[in-house]
Image (cartoon, rainbow, N blue to C red; front, side):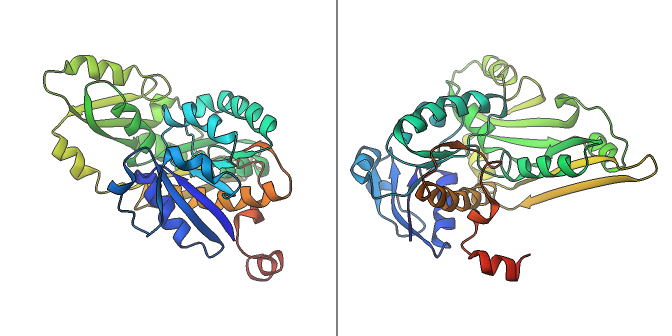
Length: 324
């Protein structure tokens, strides 16, 4: 039985909790939170502990599933956790993944632990599709579209701005760009050409809204490269929108094997709940990390480094018999 710990209990933490409850080969040692543990009422009846208690579980947890945000939580906290535990996280700031990898690789190697980073559906499942499609169709172009849906990381980044009470952000593909790819035109598209980002933001009384809008639109790695719309609304309106955290997207590889024969490879996801699907991916890779750590693997891995069979609870024999 794989023993896991869940760190954080926001939307992603709830998704991970549900996924662990469906994993017959996993046991949840506990949910660890910075909030008052007595204030949490988890959707599955797992023990809840203060983060201050986590150190006492060293040696009792095979892998920690980290449910913090990419803006500050994971960059500031993962390295410290990795000193004592194997970890899996969903760090999704694409431009900073190499830097994040290098930082954690040093810590993991020094402490004999293993960390799987940037695990989710993008980066994650979509990353595998981009690699696979490019390998089998080298004469072509990659295109990735997200949405329409709620981006957890971008929403969290807005909420970190001083004066913001709550916020939600929708990523919206531009239909003209999507249609051009689907029709096989192989267009050259910039980041701005492909997506629109629309934000709904509730702010404190007396806050300079124009300054907050400027901070959002100029935020590097999140909004600066996109056409961005900022709507200021009430906190009640944001909370209402947060009841439905749907998302999805598409990965395309468009190209040719000969001048006469063109191909369009596509993977699409349509998600009723972004955090629940992301949580499910984290749990599958938690299983893989536990297996790899047991074999003596240390350092940092991404989806490109993990044998796909390690994600499944099935035996090799059953995989060959039922899925090959």
